Image (cartoon, rainbow, N blue to C red; front, side, top):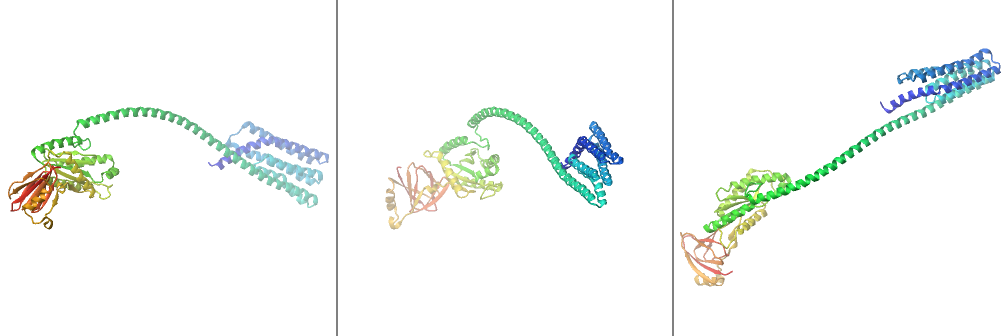
Length: 531
């Protein structure tokens, strides 16, 4: 039900209540008007039928008064409002007819003062009805029509000046009553609508006020709960800090005690260093090489950003198991070198074997086709590897192997990743060819003189084809020059061949194997000098 329908029901009920409330005033005014007409008719000698006719409004008024008293006592429900409204309209119509009948009869008697008084009373009662019945347009129009129209019609039938004047007065009164009734109806209707809106707004306001009060209570309850939660949270945070401290202390203890990385399951860096130190000492005694492979995942930070730390840990574990699978001998050890770097220690493995193993490992990971959505230059996981091999010597610390592997790893990363780079110690050795225009004819004397300029003592040796390689290691920088034949130099698994007239500079501490290559004996000269 919308606002208009509600207003209509409320208006109808209130209108009927108001009509019966003003009925007493209407009856009093009617009694006064009827008494006035009786007095005027008596004064001007109106015949007895006319005086008796003036008594009819009094009878009607008394009847309406009795009906009004019954309504006020009965206080009927809303369902009976329409019936009581019809009863009121019937009473008002009877009263209006009585005033109209008096006006017609008195005009018919042709007693001008009495006729004028009757017309005036009818007009006055119509205007009073407009005021008293304000908002009830039907009742007002009906009353004015029954009270004024009959007299106006009868006056028009006289067709004389007096009839015209009286008819015009009645018609004017009727028009004025109708216009006033419409204006009053509109004002009353707007007032009722505004009142209904105000009542509904007041009702909504009360509801909102009740809701606000409930929200205030809920807010206070929530605030209290939040304060309690904050207190609990602070306690939990304090307890969590203690637990975290204990967990960190326990993790540190486990790190010191356990040789394993908790993420990959491989050896941790501490255990890897300890194993390297042990194998280094053994390789020094047995004169065997030690190789180290460092593996780093290409664009690992981008993988962490794309998949998260948990997935990154799973990836490290998976790659770590692949690295571990290539360490098949008893001394081989796979470990976690740094955060995203893994390492494989290969005692007794030469440079060629370590390089082949590194390439096989790179291909194994590449063919696994592990997705990498965050990579810029690839769509799968790849790795780059740095390889270094050293035959330990007392003059070389074990950290030299780590430095070389790191240097090779950096070069592999610099070249774009997904690559194996082996550290080549031969690049440290400088090779100088015999320059005949400047050095003269190549012979033993000229070669010895050239070497004397670089060192102090020169030793001549002869290597024959088919002999076992001889090892050379010197604590000082060394120059080896070839007079005849071809000399094969093997350094930590890397080989190169020098020819007659060539001189090669070997830094101190580097161990090489020398062997005659071809079918001619090799005459070599060795010059050493202090650092």
